[in-house]
Image (tube, helix red, strand yellow):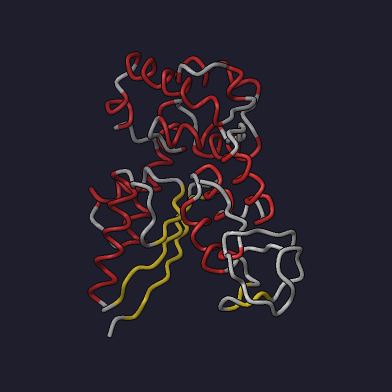
Length: 260
C-alpha cells in the first residue's frame, strides 16, 4: 500500500471544491481532476480510516496501541511502500511469524510473564539473550534489532525451532502464574475453564470489526465468545482491546452497537 496524497483523499476537498491553500487549486476553486496532489494535502477522514485499518500490522498495531503518533504512522507507511526496512519489535514479529504470544514464550523459556513483558517493553536483558536465542533458534543480533527485511530469515528460524521442540507439549505446562491468569479469565469473562485456557494464551489484542487480518485460534475464540454474549443482549461487538499488564492481570475494553 501507499499513501495517495491526492485531492480525492484530502480533507480540504469539500464535495469537489478546494478549501485548501495549496499549489494546485485555489481556495474555493472547483476540483476538475481529483487525482492531482499539492503541497497543502492533509488526510481526509474516510481515507484516514481506510489506511489506519489496512496498513501492515507492524505499522498499524503501534499506532492503535498509541506507541506512535499519526505523523510517524504516515512516514512509516510511505517508507514501507518504498521498500525501506521498518524496525519491528522482535517479540511482535515472533507473535506474528511463530504464532507465539508472550504468555507462550514465558512458558517455553521457563520464566515469569513479567520477564517477557519487560523484554518486549524495554529490550531483552543481555543475560537472557543467549538462552532466548538458543531455545527459539533466532540469531542473537535479532534481539538487538529486527526489521521487516528480516522476516524471511525469521520464518526459516521458525522451521528450525519447530524441528527442535514439541511446542504443543511444552505449552501444556501450567506454572503458578499462568494458572492464576486462567482463573482470572474465567472470573472476568464468566467462561468455561477450557475456554479460559485457550484465551489465556493472548497477551494483547486490538481488534475492530471487519479487520482484514486473520485471527489465531485463541483470538478468534475470545472475539467469538464476547460477540455471542453481545448478541444475546441485542448488541454487535464493534471493537475489543485485550491486554495483560506486567503482573499478568488482564484488561479488556469493548465497544458495542445497539441493535434495533
